[in-house]
Length: 408
Ligand code: C5P
Image 1 (cartoon, helix red, strand yellow):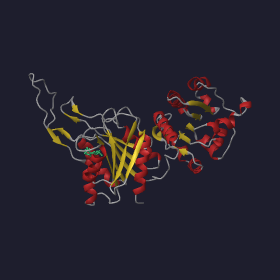
Image 2: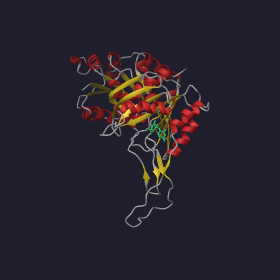
Image 3: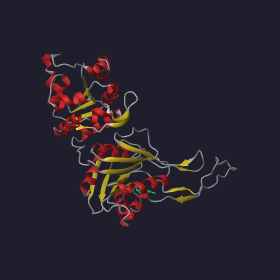
Image 4: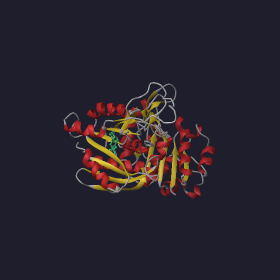
């Protein structure tokens, strides 16, 4: 159980802080909410008190004997500010301490995460850009906001990342405070995620259990490390689009192959986290296949393209830049021919990618779970064990390996 301070700035997205507070209390953490005075114009004090189970103050003169303006920050394991408005970040960057939240930000020595939300013009204004940089220079993590519908009819960058995503990133910072350096600034990253569906007829398909969580975690972490990320997503669990990521949807392996083939020529990193069906029905019926007596008709299968292998081949042929880093995944179970790691080594050699992330699957492992474990195998022979941790944490470890071999 950790001490989490959730700061809430005065923006319309303040109501979304409620689900973040709930996430952390339900995970068993001790949560203190510190809104600014203007945040209380949007959400009442009673809501924050009821959700956190703790008293809520905005100023430095309440409960003075407890010295909350110093103590809350000192005792925190994580300070998460959502939404962080332009004004709040300006005050924090300047080192002001004119309310309880800014005083807490000055005394906190734990990871501090700002989740900005504001209109695009404000986000792009040189004053805000400079304040964000100052906060990052001071060691805080300022998240890349999402793009999309803002208050009113506006759309653009500046939307608060999805609360589920902010909570996951907050958990990540508890697991590993240095998880989100800005070391991938401007790097183009292409990630595939989720499962494919291979239609049999208009209503049936062959699919798999992939939830897409690992691929989404990779896209999310890469974007938060400054990368320009495109995520090509097949079927997934109900996951929020990662903030600042271009999301393209596909259904079949052929569609995925086409998207990757065109986009791989314009990327610095390709990460194939998708669970691609190896086979597809040889023919797709135009109308629903009818029951035909008691014996079902066999399904004849055709092979899907190996997209990862094709990318490696295209790189060798010079169609994809030689510097492009290619990462594959292998979901393995041990069998009579060898363990999970043996199969992983064999697959790395066969696929010819730079890194292969090997996960043990089966028995409720990996597929659909929030946690993951495995190894990163590099083509030079280095093998890094990935201890059990969240898929977001695993994503940051994979990106560390990618960052280490990127030629820039
Ligand atoms: O051979 P296997 O399916 O185990 O390989 C897994 C890796 O290859 C994953 O990175 C997956 O995204 C990729 N793959 C692919 N095209 C296929 C099958 C798998 O790119 N048809």
